[in-house]
Image (cartoon, rainbow, N blue to C red; front, side, top):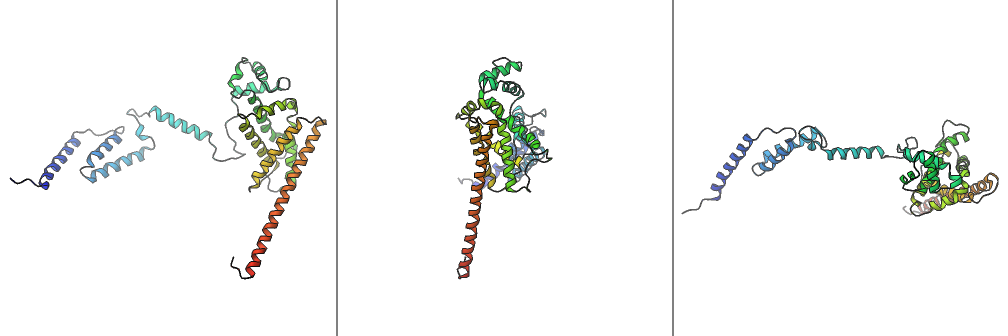
Length: 335
């Protein structure tokens, strides 16, 4: 008895498979918008074993559906509403876009405030008690009472007494622009000014820096303890951040418009000078802190002179190297 060949067995099996697929398609209901993606996926999977034409058709249909309905269309329920998980994800992404700054700009500052309204009311009232109580929890408790809150209300401030120090730093930095405008005779434009010379910018930097140091006069008796708190390891990052923001603010208000690597060196140098002058001021008992101002002028002049030396040295090295290359070329050296 002869065995049937494989070809004779494949043909009936293929006919049975095609007839089964046709029967299922005829009996299946027309898919709605909500179930179109899942049915097209299952149809493309089942028909992939039979023919490549039906697979490409279902795949293109699924792609066109996702393109027309937009992102997240696969998460639309039968009643047309999106799933709660998708709504929460989109809400979180929208909040991140609102609080994210694509670039730094003085004219377009961040919209997020440093303190909440409740924190602002407690800290502004507590700030009035700093001369008598210092930057301590006692000042925070007194400020909470003055603001109409319970004595325990300052516990909403996770930084404790450092929050009162940071309030002083942020407040004085934000108010500096208005004071500088009055200092320079009410100029209509305070900020980067390309027309100023280096000497004029240095004089303006000294004036703006001294204007900021003068704002510490009302709390100078308590500033040593504030510096001790700021030096604690947990508060060093925020303290350095505020110092960097202050140096950037001072140079901008003074008219600095540098866009080369000196942008960084100027701010680093000014941060060091300001920190030293602030520490010097805590031990200064001269009238109107004139010794501190003289100390500030000396440090700024030294930095300017050192910067000029390095600038002249760089120019000399560049000129010498260029002259040496030209001499070698005149001798026939291929450079």
